Image (cartoon, rainbow, N blue to C red):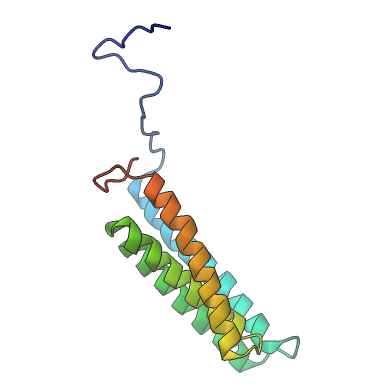
Length: 148
């Protein structure tokens, strides 16, 4: 079957267009900090809950939760700022390393052995790397520029 060629200057239905940005730059900045804070608090609570293992809540347990929350939020913010500037392989590797370390530490707080915690962290890191590499590989052109 023959199809008509699109006329120059006309947009075809398959042409990609960027969705409009409804929020201001300030709103995006606040949302970034709020996301990091909420994720950090959830992670810190999870670490503290795993560490106390159903026992009483102590001051050291609360301190561990808050320090874990601050460290997680700071590292997440750093990875979130640094990763998009890298090529797809390093981008996926950086997020995989972050996810694997976070999972390994979280698993270790449940009184598991260091070897098992390391194995779980490596398994999560490998799965994260494969998933993110596939996503970044399918969302970039041949020159490595992201298709938005």
